[in-house]
Length: 362
Image (cartoon, rainbow, N blue to C red; front, side, top):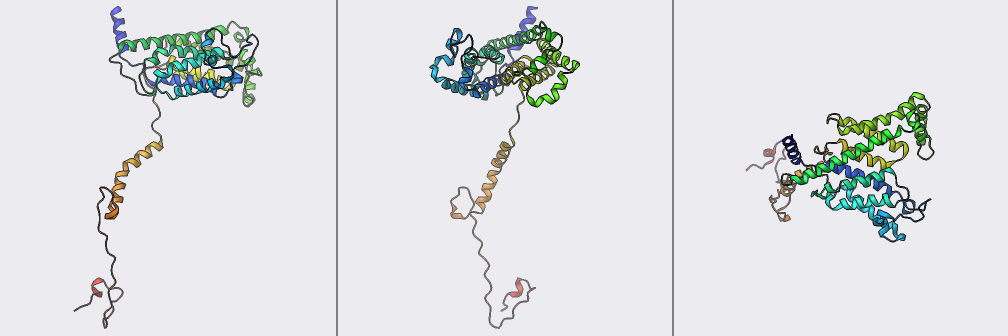
């Protein structure tokens, strides 16, 4: 048994975990935090609240926050620095150098903001767990091809262990989210979502009311909409032990579920954070994501570059010898035809005659 386990570990260590799959998760996670910071002024993120007279919060771990390092009257500088760091993570540049900054920005927002949401807390945890993977990634871009692990199997196996811990964390998160709701009577009797979507703050937007309200007031409709998320969350939790052919369907269901939450409740950062978690949880890390091929503009530019030598040769063939173009073949100019000089007494040639008919005979 130990021999089989050792062989399995050796096979796993020879497979590269540094693919664009975890890079996609990093980008999605950074987009969620970037959206919050980019479209929210510092006066909205950090403001006094009951039980929190000092803002931003700088107690406990928040003392190391980027918003507590700068002076209190320069929070906008810290916000712009955070935006710059997150943009580097979004484009995927040098994960080894941007990993610590990514975690620092997410944990700073979670610890110092007046009202952080669940997406901010999840991003702080997952970026912390991704640190060992990103710090060992020597690629220039996290969108690049998988790195070679033939000479570092120990590092590879350590990264695979980190991904297993992340999957375990995400599975526990979904299991707790599904089971904990059943302890509330509103979720157990199938009416919980009616209260949430009817809430004036978290409720559904106006453009969805004409077609969503008839479903919510229907007993069967509201029950399906309430128990459906519980079933999806429980299925996502068991995705930890699901076979690979089943995981794409679970991933699609989870992505659709969180997109609907983002649209109906306005939780954009939470949506991006949870989709990133689903990518790490259900998408095989060793199978790179097939990225779109080059755009049509790039393809046309390549065709122009391929045709350029032929165009240059054609232009050089028609250029005069004194043009000075290197490699061009000088062609002597062809003189223009000179009209014949009329000879006195000669009979003009008929219009239909060829060139020989107009020649003067001796």
